[in-house]
Length: 295
Image (tube, rainbow, N blue to C red; front, side):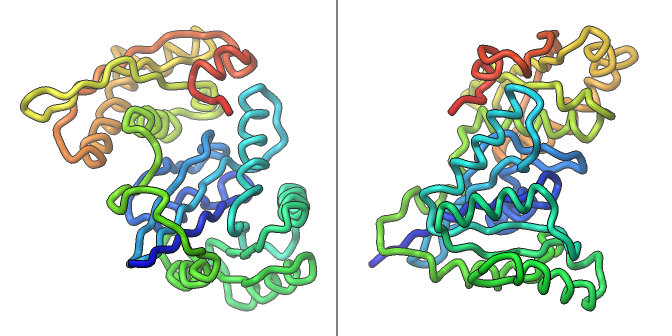
């Protein structure tokens, strides 16, 4: 069978729905989502194999103004992910004005000379008349191969988006095995699931100052998986909040995480979590690299 593949970057400002779109395209949860910006920190590949065509969708961190070493890493990840791909999908909200982040991304897309698709997300939240205004503003600002209104939440328009992506596929062997849905190691997926629950359960700045390290990942003869995870935070006061009164918050986070870990792994998981303090780790080159955020 003659096979084809396409590598397509999904980019946009924080909290615009890139990871929700990636998960919908793949058909399962491979990228964490939350209602807080800058949820995604790493470049994550979502793999979709249909017939003789394999799509590799590169989910990227939200493009933002960096204030830490971790932020620098995230912004550089976006820049590098726009280069050397077959096409780029710019995901925007249905707002009839172009923000600073979108302007910067459009400049980078133009400089890369990469074909671009505009995906106007969250169309389930606006009237159709508003949508026409958004299309007009972006059509004037840049040359897109296609402009597709979508809802990554409901799936509306996503199939059309995938069909447009087909034209960027080129003759080549599949880049990944057909049954694979992500390039992330299982340990990394488990760490990200725990971090997602921190984002959902904790308020304000605290979850953004956390990192998760999987220190044990082993499978018993029975198929049960044992996972030990250490949650790092930046202040002693944050540690107390993460643990909660009589350990209630940490228990809640761990229970929620274990449920999702079991769904992903397809087997029973025993999860043990600890909390440690690493002050200002986001501004330490060494610790940022140590927690897996390296080029």
